[in-house]
Length: 246
Image (cartoon, rainbow, N blue to C red; front, side, top):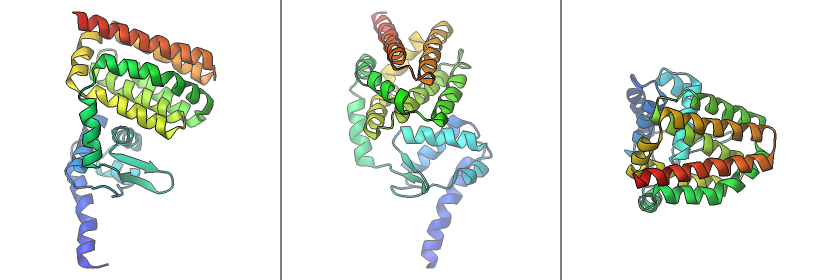
């Protein structure tokens, strides 16, 4: 390998190491790695360091790094290939086109799209979720239930919970559709509605529905799981309509 190639190999880890100083929480590390990708420190096709190496650089647990990588994958910035590692898939053109569509979608339109997609996604998750995926869902749900007084943390973990359901469907197109739908959560209209709706009492009710949905999936009860997701999304739709009318 020539000296230029060796320098290129060393530059990116050093940059990520500097970014990692002091950033030990999931949200902080996600933001730092996201910026590293979008600013070109890592480009399309690059392989990220292994989980163990990232955990050492950010001085955090590997479980935290797994959540960070899940967040970045859900945003379409990376992809994880079993047996190969984690690779950057960020593409300015394709991401920009998707964001242009997302920016024109209202929160109510988001719920309408979810009502069209998620019931069948849940059917597939009941059929195909592995034991490890069910454990991951339960871990995320346990975190969700600790977010009664933190709207941002609740919204973040809620997104992770539903996206893990999409992943459990074992249908890559279903996962992609859900990721595009879910991207609406990032815009200002959603933030405004979230701040109106998410009282501690409402968070408790949403989490009661999350728990009922999870238990139906764990029992492999398709009919009850579909009922629970429909009830959950219908409540969200009604809450959004009520907030919009205020």
